[in-house]
Length: 283
Ligand SMILES: [Zn+2]
Image 1 (cartoon, rainbow, N blue to C red):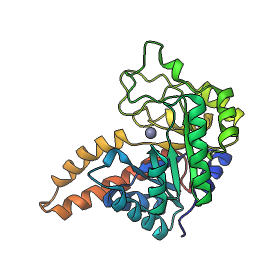
Image 2 (image 1 turned 90 degrees about the vertical axis):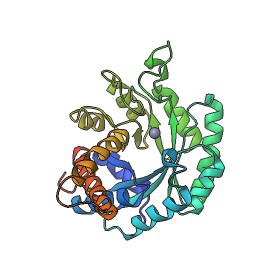
Image 3 (image 1 turned 60 degrees about the vertical axis):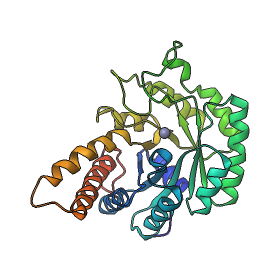
């Protein structure tokens, strides 16, 4: 299958109300396991390069690998640069073959976020890439909120409509109580914000910091209007335990055994998430 555009995948997801897993594929074990999960479940997949793995896994090694995996896959797979921080980095990722870029200007003043995002949209679209931007800040941790409280960071639905119209962005990451990293205490997820933004804008909406919530919440979040589900921290932590347990079974002592355990972990976890997000062929 050709390298599919994230826009094509996510517009269909929004229309038919299923979520698409946006998962870190930065090393080859993750990449193989997740692509096999997509193929075996008949699910679309967004394979992500995130700088969190830099400098261990440099972009110039990882992106050509995930792009190749997307081209080889029998499932629809798009590739994503997550949290791009500058036009230069976006240009580099696109030159390496990536077909979706996220620019995170959420910490900038509103007008500057618009101007910088527009610049990235113009460049991305001229080079065949879809562009995601962020509005309303998603904190690094649920305990990082300022004294103003988490609500002060939530995306304003009216401002979201204005932002989308002025930037021409393809997908919008919004803030509604979601947080990157580990949630401390009970997360306060405000689905009314999601429903309101969904009504005001016609492009697919994105949830960052999705991992770590009770399983029952994901279908609710997706039904409220989220299409792209960025899930990492909980999977990254479970991988360590899962791979260690796998190494203790049978006669496993070589490095390639660990690689196999790792691929299997991401395969199983990928299938579980695709099913939870309702993107599998069986629904
Ligand atoms: Zn994120």
